Length: 256
Image (cartoon, rainbow, N blue to C red; front, side):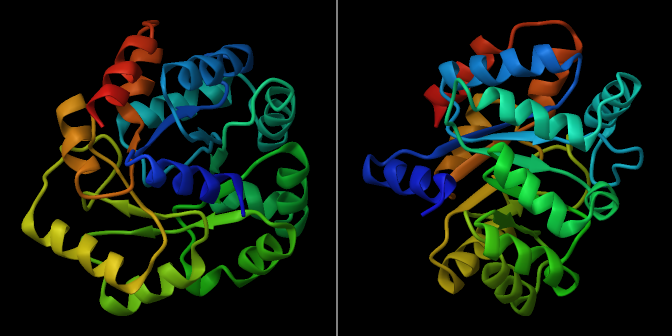
């Protein structure tokens, strides 16, 4: 069982939900990112998503786009992010997920990326611009090397898409709460609740919800519907302002 699956299993035993913060690797520096990982774990994070900077992050809103740009200006590459994970593994075993667009993975070489990711201590990967229908190479390699592949569902996902994503995902299923980019406004609608129920009906895998969650009360609402809560833009914004993230993450942990 992967570290991600084990985390969800242990949380379920105690009636808790997973807190999954997102930060951009190398924003404002790799040294800072390493400290943030430690800070997030101490503040109550269960799993951490590490963004890999890319020049055309289509799924991301202005806040995270800015983080991509700053990290790229710092010369951060996928190779450097993998080295960072290898370094942080000396001090923590918290599950780590890379959120990367497909282009850096393709340029690295899919199988080479998977092998290096696992060797470095990465537990899972999210590629928002890669759908299961086109991900056979990644999925096959990930299965061979025990890397979780986490795919996205959205309010517009059809029953057929839900079935495909549930089959292709390991670790958990990522439900995007809004139709749009990261940092949008959360809306807990009836269609959203119905889609989450349908996902739960089609799969026993945990479901984490992200996009648009920026306040503790919003996190609490989502925790009542899903197995995990992903918060990204609100944390990245604090980092960009040079503010501490500890208090905010602790408030999220308490809320869920």
